[in-house]
Length: 390
Image 1 (cartoon, rainbow, N blue to C red):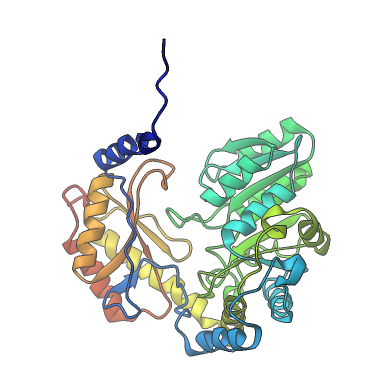
Image 2: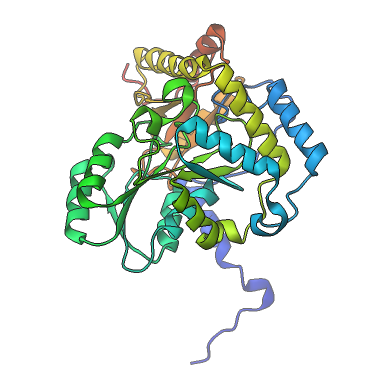
């Protein structure tokens, strides 16, 4: 039988079918460029502390760019490490309570670096079922044995670690990005100590929100600086900049410098981003009340939404997740909110591990009482049939 050889114009014909399938399922994603100044009330971004446009943060970016240039010019091991990078690392470690830190170009890269550098063939990596895609991808690239355990359930973690008996690590988000619920870090840490495993925690949604003055979920749990604990985080949420970091014992950070491909072979974080993050960090030190404020805003959003009949997950940090009847309904709901002047997130499969689509509202420390009332009113006024229990 003669096999058909695709012609050049046909080699991507399979994409047409994939696009049609996404359209039928209501899963098409599109880019929407926003203007520099938007009239929309923003509850979609991760600017938890309202620092991305703060004058000090912007000035930190501008001064860094003027001094160091627009780009890092190379990987951190060649020319991409500036004095500014090391200053940021020292202050991040000091603020969060860890011995050392390593700054990377994104939080995604930080998770890839930590998971892959701390495991190899024969290592067991235990991953919470609710983990972010960057952790999942780190597990896939690690070449380790990977066990996915039920979401936020310490007992299967303990049993899985005990059955392995060799080198192992548990990796989890501190606050999960879909529902905004916190991981049982104390119980997870206890299981790791009992079985001699390392604990790697992505504190992307905890930094700036949880802990004393926003020092993070690990600091709040008394785990910051513990010998068997490593944290990853992003600079793009509470600090309003861009980039990521890995924090932990100094020997772990030295190991990543020598072995983490996501660090070694990537261009260093742009100086402007490093300068902005450092300025935001210093501002947070001076204004620790911002962390408590964002938690209060999240709690008020949740209470108002659920009192009106919507189903939402109780927030442990800044994320308020509202369930939608279907993927297509969630997409329409988010679009209707946008048309009414409110920007909200829309989470649909495969971003939601349980297949249940949601609107995701992110609290901000700089939201006023009137803006909270307006946001809740817009979500309720655009809610599709089946979204409320009334």
